[in-house]
Image 1 (cartoon, rainbow, N blue to C red):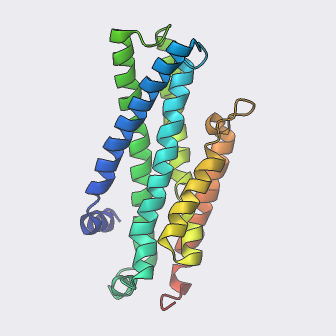
Image 2 (tube, helix red, strand yellow):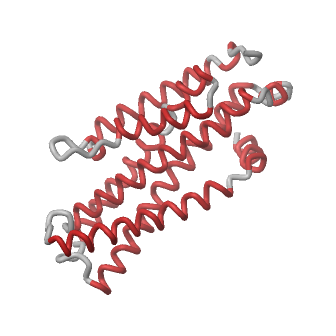
Image 3 (tube, rainbow, N blue to C red):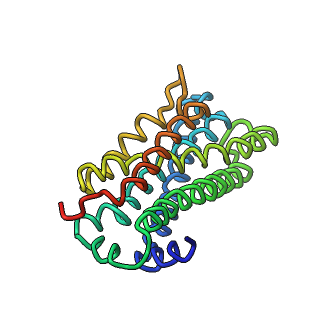
Length: 231
């Protein structure tokens, strides 16, 4: 399985993913700094609360990489069906299910890793900048950072599962745009951060969405032998 994943990574050259992740992290960090400065000028202490900034970082990072997950599914799976290059892959003496598992494993694993690394980088750099320039009225407390670290792993696992949901829509339409658009819709639903009920941080619901993604992946793998690749 690892060999298949390495072959897929070599084949698709995911340098764009790394570059995109770096650019996204810079953009999220810039947005957090800009938001803090504007809130300071307008005298809005609620937005400048350290807990609010931690929530903002977590939400933006997870939303971004769910969409990146949709792009990965589009490139690794849907585009191959659309261009019929999947026919060549299925001619290899390798189990089709293993091929599909390797592609989905890449998507979920990259999403999981980038969510964790991006959160650590964005929050860490913002913390450093705040320590030097005092952007926030109150500094991050050790308890807040520890709690953020505790929540990070389960939320990253949930995000990895959620990133697989666009597979369902992509396979139905065999459409790259549909796959990517569906990932945006998934973000709007799953990473909703309304003050009344912040879905984005409610772990039971996040794991419910992740279970839906896992079920979609399971049936996608299970039915791969039955897929009509000539359509």
